[in-house]
Picture 1: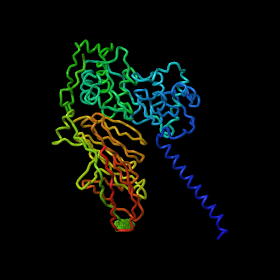
Picture 2: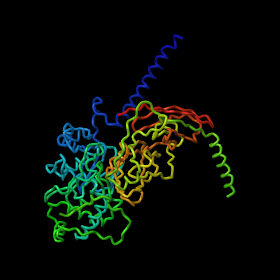
Picture 3: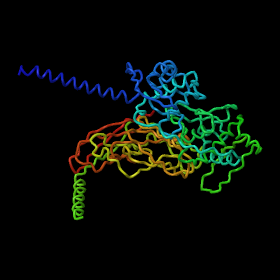
Picture 4: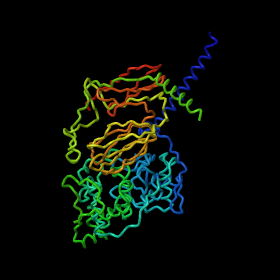
Length: 317
Length: 233
């Protein structure tokens, strides 16, 4: 019996080691599955060899390491998890790159943005937020940073970026296109959040939260001056993209499945008239119609619900 | 051609035998303690929905019945399920009616297609908030076609309509089709289980999960009951 003891000991220690390994394996997979700040020292960051392609420039993640740490990590965090030391002070909160959910895309809701989409966000900055315009960087530096953002989520290795939506050529602005846009604004109930005059004061506005449960305000079209911008750009094409692709991670949904391309342009024309301080062709057309948007007459009427209360949008001035 | 009748005979035999050995797990979900008070929902901002409810409906975070029954608990086979990866082909539906999600909790198999319908005269936006699956957010005005989607990872996903902040529901994306949602009286039933050892999990959106092991040996019905500890807040 005594002879068996060492064997048993070895067996027991082997068993213990195996259990330990199993426990560790469980711990590691569990830790990667959820965000656990302050759960001990963070693992060292692996800079995966991600790339970006902007025109003829190829960005490399490895080259953006110091730029990211110097200029981005303060808000977005060393690990891209939006846990930078400034993050607590910011509203809206910085993007959490580990989720790979991006607001400004030319691609459908739920898909990854294109390299150009991310690049343009660096070029443009995000109005009404703490994300500045990064025009201090060279084109190459920005391309490298776009590649660097991709190291934080495995989605970039498994999925391709979405296909950019097709935007038809913009038809001319007419009082009819503005009138149709206004009818769509009513029918699609944009006003429930953005308010009947686009002032961000619709009946649901005060209840809105983003996907991280932070309060968020709908865009106020009327507030800006002549050069007013949107979060995701300032051109008519940008507005088209915003409501067609949705602003992922926020209450703003995608309307790609419910608005026809040409109808979408009419909506863009009407939205421009909500920017009452802007000097543009839409407001010029409206002025020459004496500031009155005529009621839209549907040539192919379909049974649709009219707003049941008196909060229908006014528009115009 | 001659093989066809034999094949059919074999198949019926197989189906017959599997039915013969099909076990069932059934039981009740109840609670102890005091569940949170559910508030009446004020839908006055959406008259087309408000008029569909003779008496205002309440929030559905905790739905209880007589004898401490707890409803809307998803009971499913979390380990040992014989059908992992067997994606059902029939689509299931999630309906928005009277500014309410019907059902409140929609269980589905991973990769199973489901359809979202808008039966209301108002626009909804369907905004599920997954953590491991991919997040999307789509508008669905009245009269639009169903939105068809699926999820490729198991997860309990909160569903919101941002336009109508009282609208709350859940998708339960599971690796099995052996599931049920506790109904009035807290009853659930998982039929057609071949002999085997199973782990049963009961999930409630507010009170978390509970598990129980059960072994099916043949044509039998096993009773498994779950009791959740209710908290007032």
